[in-house]
Every structure is written in structure tokens, then in C-alpha cells.
Length: 340
Image (cartoon, rainbow, N blue to C red; front, top):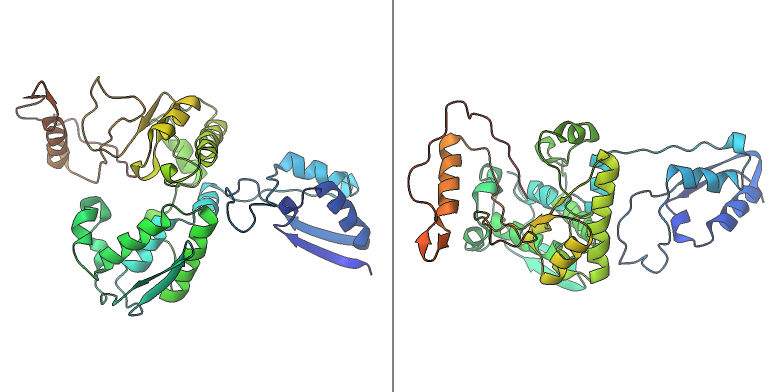
């Protein structure tokens, strides 16, 4: 039996002998028949269902050469699709932002949530009634305070979020699919919370220093050294290839790290790495566990207050590092912002 058309979607990379597979596909087609195949370029670190057979990720060049060894060269067409937004969605599942939009949006949800995560069943009930939870931005909240409100939407959000953190990208996406189905009528990620496009990322280069932050945003210390190494090194390689310049800074997802993680970051060629400890940077700090202050959409007064408080927490020989008043000049009106 010969085919007029054959569709092979995201399968070739799971077959070790791709060359033999392509030759077989060619032989199954009628004269003039068409093969439509898709393959991953940047891909997840598969540790779940396909971990024993996920052999390859392909470039345009390798895909073209693979096809031309089985099909007439003049009949081969190869293209790539996607951008930073699509890639991040594929790699990460957009877990934190999408989860926030589902669970904290001002709309009614079912009264109970039941999920299987990591082979265990977790249940949350009752679910708080709808109100505008998103007005309370995460950047102005502390996790501890929100966890102190049993059965609140914020407590639900942080509880589910914590359970998603240690999962592989594919396992995390599976749980998110279950949550989307449970919530129903989910309108999608808010434009204000999407990742940067390629053009936006290029526009930032030279304005602020761009650093690496892993491939799929895992809690590094919860994974094996091999997984940590690949996440750290691949994020550096991709960003340097994209920007065409060296990347020297790294930030730990969620601030989570261990001594072994910091050592892997140093071995990957980074010069410094940031945690989420919100204090001042001093000369005695380890360059691979630097504190970092998250900057929100503040006015000058709030920004100055944050700096004063951060330095006031530090002492040398029991003496406060900073005492006094901080003033910002009238010309200092523009401040960058970052989050984690």
C-alpha cells in the first residue's frame, strides 16, 4: 500500500535511527506523494514518559540534510517557526503566570480542586468565592502572610505553585492541563504577563545587562546534578548565541540553590549569580550567592525607602552600615524594574 500523503508530528526525535525511518517513509509514498513532518529544535529536558527514547533535537541544517538523504533535494522544503514567547510556552508551560491568571481571576471556580501531582493525590476545598484577587499584586505580597488565610484563593495559588516547582516541564504542563480543564472557559495568559518577544529582548540588550535563568525554570536544587548542569549551561549557550555576546550573570529560579548548584554555575563560566535574598551587596558576599532586590513599579520615595531599609539591615562589627536620610535628585526619574 502506497500513500498520497503522510503526516509525522513530533515523532522522529523519538527514533534513534532517523535515517532508516526517513528512507522507509519515502518508500511508502506514491510518486508525487508528500511527507509533512515536524521535529523539535529547542526542547524540554524529558524525564517522564519519553525519557528512554527522546534521542534528538534538530536544527534547520540537520533536518534538511536528513531529508535530502532520503528524498530528492529539489523536493525538500524545511522551515522553522516560533519565537521567544512560543519557545518559553513550550519549555515552561508559563506555570506561575498562567496559574495566577486561572486561580486569582475574579470569576467563579468549582468548589473543590483535586489533582494528581508526582503520583500523589492532592485536594483543596472549599474554594473561595470570586472577587478581584489580582488587584493584590504578588510583588506587594509575602507568601507567609497569604498562607495565613486558610481556604483563600491566595493560599490555594501558593500551595499549588509550590507543588509545581520541582516538576519536570512535561509533568508541570500535564498538571496545568488538568487545572485548565477544571477551571473551564480559561481565556489564556494576560498580555501584561507574557514573556518577551525576540525583538523586545534585542531592544533590552545594551540598555540593561541580560543574564541567564535556566531553560525551563526548575527549582535547581531539587534536581540531579546532570539536570542542573544542562539547565544552566544550555541557558547560557542559547542566550549567547541569540545576543552574539558573552553572558556573565545568572539568577537562580525562585532563588533556590545549594552549594553544588553554585559550583555548577561557576563551572559553566558565569562570573556571578543572584539569589532572591533582599539585602545589600557587600564586599564579603560570595559572587555566586549575591543578594538581589526585586524592584516594582515604585515612585522615587518608595524606591529610596527600599534602598535605605536594605542597607540598614547590614552591620559591620555590630554597627549599622547606613544611618541617615536618602534623597534622590530631581533628574533621577527613570528606574528599571525586574522580577523573579
